[in-house]
Amino acid sequence: MSYTVSDPPAPSDRPMHPIGRTHRIPRGNHHARPNAPKFMASVEQLKEQAGIEACRFVTDGMALGLGTGSTVRYSIIEIARMIEQDGINVSGVPTSEGTRELAEKLGIPLIPMEQAGTLDLTIDGADEFDKNFDLIKGGGGALTREKIVALASKSMVVVADQSKQVETLGEFDLPVEVDQMQWQAVHTEISSLCPGPVRLRGGDRDPFVTDNKGVILDCAFGPIISNPLALEAGIRGIPGVVEVGLFVGICDAVVLASPEGVSTLLNPGGRL
Ligand code: 5RP
Image (cartoon, rainbow, N blue to C red):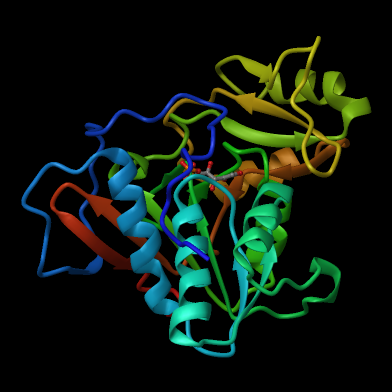
């Protein structure tokens, strides 16, 4: 079996973040790799570096949460390589049908979510992270299963390139998964909270439907989400909301790739 990434990157439902945001935050407790690349890496190479580096948290015997997205895809490929070439024995719970298909193709033993119990570690991507290691997720529409799996895990490592690092969450439109029958009522409620447009992903003629048969409202708060816990609670209280793409107090480390190299930011209040 080949573990090289020969097929094209997983399609993204949204435009790529530009590299080199102006919102930079002081980095936390991190360990830069000594062998930083001497050439300018492409975004895809940065994702691959972060995805592979995160697998140093994977050890023999672990039950893993397998995230969704174009960055964690490289972690999943690396985990498959570790199983076959290094002989480690791990199993995974996929957070989406796309991840399940990839993991199956690569021969990673899978456990159904309902049988998983407590997991040792989840590796997943993010659309934004801030200095408190709080996240916006759901750009790929898998936020509900991603949150269930992350909350069932003893630790969570996020893989990202530096475009995901922000001072304040919200420049990326906040994804909210909603019951299909309720989206218009929820849209009205969230619009009263959200300063920018609230859009049904895919539009009302052909909405994007999640693996759970829900739909997604993308909410343009702008970079103002300074109290994500309160906003998460407020939105979750609206009848018809399935899950909110705010992950607060869940992420323990971010493996971050930038043109200077890969660094691991450890959450000082985290579990790793
Ligand atoms: C999917 C997610 C993804 O992890 C997030 O969108 C990041 O994806 P990518 O690594 O492709 O930028 O939350 O629901």
